[in-house]
Length: 124
Figure 1 (cartoon, rainbow, N blue to C red):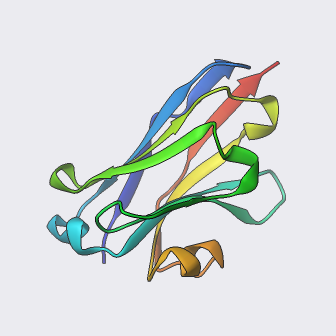
Figure 2 (spheres, rainbow, N blue to C red):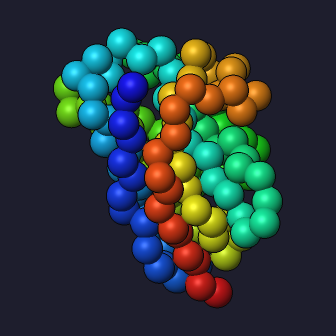
């Protein structure tokens, strides 16, 4: 099973930026059809944020982050990224990377593997 390890979370002021990374253990990362990001507020279920297909030809985002967040992947480095700009206090959450069958499955929260999460806190 592929292990996923997130990093890059932290505390930032509103309007600032952070870049999250998700390192995959498998050299077969390049063959994984869809990987994505979710976030979880305290006491709530994990919500879909963004997903990207194997060769980066297709990306999908939840409406609240469109135009502010960018998902990307580097298959040579076995790494998924989430560039977060113009951060808002409501972006404060634990962010998880995940593997899915395809983007639609991820958007439907059908996930094959999860990372352990990284905390993002945006102060007002």
